Length: 137
Image 1 (cartoon, rainbow, N blue to C red):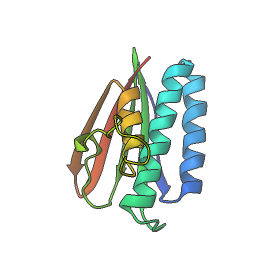
Image 2: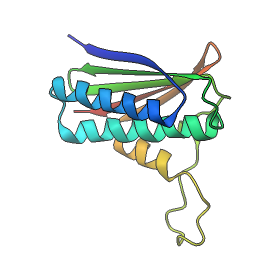
Image 3: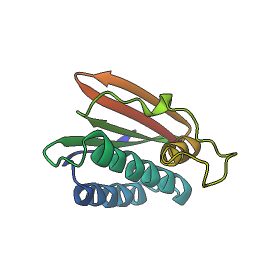
């Protein structure tokens, strides 16, 4: 049987941190191992802060959806927002072969998220960005 936690939060970093803490507690109660829990936490913090700071420009009058579902062998994280269309899965990988001074700023967070998840899928549904990330457990 799948177990799920869903919440809608204001688009603030403080609300994101509270939501991330609730997700961590939920995953611990569900017996999700540390590695999978870390990957989910990293993804939520990175994607959520990108939405708040970049997608919504820091505006606190939006709502972000966060859903976490524990299934046999995997954890599914779904994050949605009403910001401008943005598909993080379509972003080019960062130029890791360049020195720090030569590298353009940005892109490492999304790279870390996709590197620590099993799969990532983006859709635009009802005027909302929806990102589904799967983490093996």
